[in-house]
Image (cartoon, rainbow, N blue to C red; front, side, top):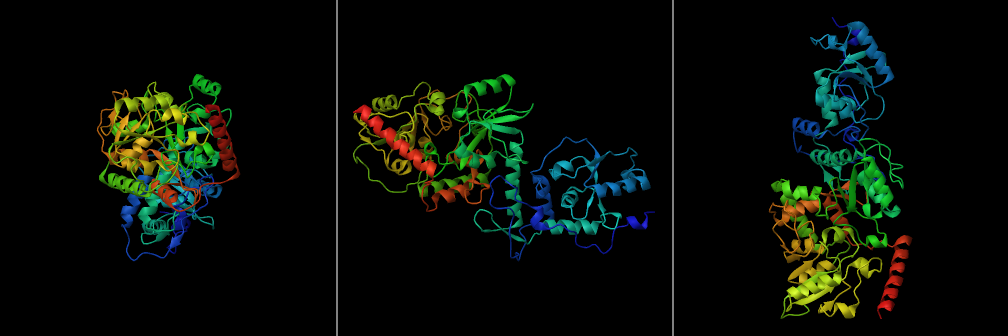
Length: 557
């Protein structure tokens, strides 16, 4: 016989769980959008409540899913507040154990675990056999999704167990299948399935960052853009350090080209796991050398994607990944949008250029930064832009060669300049202005060392010859002269490479909302009409570059 004061209240028909609060926007550092705005409801639901519950359970979203994950025992009763603890004590005094209330055959007493702080509720309930909480705690909805018996503390001092009808009301309120939400990136309508998928995207990103404790080598002007993409929940202050430390089992994110050798050696001696961070493939409107922050980064636990001397997560995706038809269709759509807009890593140009020679095959040779890590690790000893030009001319004596120096070199910031009187001994034309994408569209073939221009040429169905070993070499789409690693045995279609390289591997930040976003959002931002960044630091760097170019030209004269 259950005492009357422990009976569920019959008049409780609508629990205090608000749908806009159950599926939440995480508090990413610098985010300018805090929640999903509700729009007018839909006439028809995109899926049944049961389907939405199953998806939420599989994706583990809802509540403060970015919260901490303390170590927990394997089995316990979770208690969520001091008042709920008093209610729990009354239950134990009345029945001996919560298990007795549940009519569970086991007589083993469950330990009481009190967690009132903001934690990942899915983690908190991972080993819970029962939950004791306040009536307005959002964790009730997650317990309902997981089927965990819940005891609710009442403001009048009683405690009651949720009944089936109340559980159904909680789930219906938390997952309103006809509700319509506002897309935080562009204001477009989203249904409940869209919101679940977006929060799942954020959850996967946050969980992948939980091991990272700090970061080194990150220039101050890019930290605000990088921080949200490396955020693993909790406090974000103090993440970037000049002297990085990490607890046992934790990792350090590294922008290796800017990290000191001493610090790298120190971390290596400690056995600290290092995670390589680099610019993404669709980076920004403007140059990193001009201190324009990136909208995209790559994060790799195996090694830098451009270093063929070791595997990387990108190489692993291309070698072993499975690409579903929906992902391939998405990659194809993204590729067509990028090509139509003339979008490249640093710029945009969809102008149609005239062929400079109508009788001969035109070959583009993009220059690179000669001390860049992609050259030093992937160039197989070929470092010099001039040597690359010489090799291409030797292979193609009758072709019309166009040499385009790297924009960072043209800007005067990086190594790799070839005096024009020397480059014209091997190239028929030297072009420093204009977008690389417009130029690729006019040529028949592109010869590269490790340049990303080769990947951009593949997306435009151009023949590509690689002299080094870029990440896109060895998969059956390029003519490879460099020593491609024997471990690259898979043969990939163009859109499989696009899917891995632009959709699955990089991370993107929406500059408007300040939220991590899918690739398509950044492509929309980069193709929208707007001016290039012109802050004080960017202007100073561009002035510095002009002075360096003049000094280089004077020395070459």
